[in-house]
Length: 367
Image (tube, rainbow, N blue to C red; front, side, top):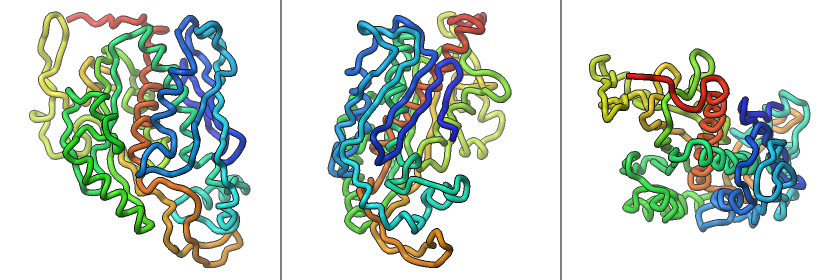
């Protein structure tokens, strides 16, 4: 299985939803970066289950253990291994899924590809795999703070179903986002969103929506032409997350309604710095960051496992029915916010180290 991500800052996640534990190995982290379990734990607490009344009730503390690569509070430059043990696994709740494929889940496709699958909670297809990503991103965050302080990466719930928020990407703060259990930057929509999620949960149903993200303070020069464009790596990162079904950056699909004259971001000088009057490009041009804020949106489908009877087939090829079991999020978006931030952090950290290795940390561009 392809469980590796990144080039200079490379991670490999491992573990299954109801196995002994999950985790990550990070290779390529520079030495002498301050790092503690507490810094990783803060981010894991943001994605863990059971944190509010609108997420899965699975009771996991998601306590991390650093097994290698850190000594006396600093990274050594050697691989960093982080482990989170599964404490509240209930594989028996999934016994019916051993022979029946859950609609819109990975059960059938895993069987079709490998001829074997871990049916206990979805195995590697479970969102529990993202623990390793979030832990690795907490390490990447420390690298960014050390080598390029000032980069800020934020994500928030923009829509749930057809309920839309009004959030200014230039001014929204982490405090605003974390002040509510939905993790939206629009306080006026919080209660409506909570009610919408609870209604779907009570009906045994689920909801999807959009997460928006912004990367502020990113220096110009990150990314590479052709295959390693920064937006291409961001798209790959986001679409590798469970339940994602769409990605757009800058003007996105809306840009197709504009003319070239309307869409072009005109340059101007601002105290010796090249800036753009507009940001339809989303902070990336030619696959390389231009110093403006990088803004993008990620679409998440409704959670596949729902608590109502649905038609499906068995692994022996017979038509049957299946009702969801176990503990699941009626809407993945509140817990997906730190996952989107995590994948953004991993991409920016990796490209920063690649730029540092090839061209030096500072941009060589001159007006």
